[in-house]
Length: 217
Image 1 (cartoon, rainbow, N blue to C red):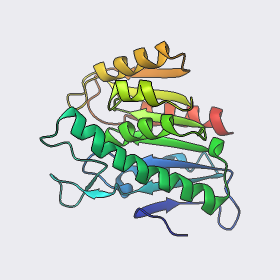
Image 2: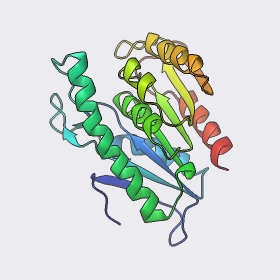
Image 3: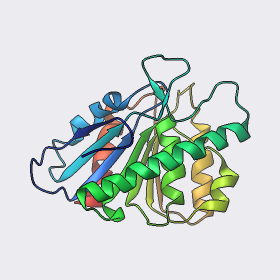
């Protein structure tokens, strides 16, 4: 099976068709193998799910071995939004490829992202007309609140998690997102981890797993 982005695929089902897929989007400067660590934990409890861990489409400006969904250096807010729209198209293509490759409907696909991967997952998932199952976001934010307010096309269930000591993407962005989604009558779950910096703690991976089980199994 081919994909438009270089992709790590974790599929424990062998020749059987999976019932669902989780697409995991890594953070700024990371790659698909980084976030596949989370998939390798979850796969032990989700036997009918395939995990898709793409490399973001661009080489990272500050990490020669890593990738970025869009550039964050010396960019205005409008430039960041414009570049994120390009990444959104590419992630949408990948979602369509996963649907086609595994003959899955959109409501059997979950988007999961960390940091910049959370940002692009939220923007992409909320704007798709064919509603995906849900979005799991760690340590991220809504890239442009006004853009999302004006362009939401579907309402997948959302869980957002964040460390209270995050200095890379401050926890205030989780509160901003929660306020936005509540205002738009979204079903959203949130969790703030105490004494946690910019990372996914063990509790975060466990909560993500419980959320997936409720959504898919």
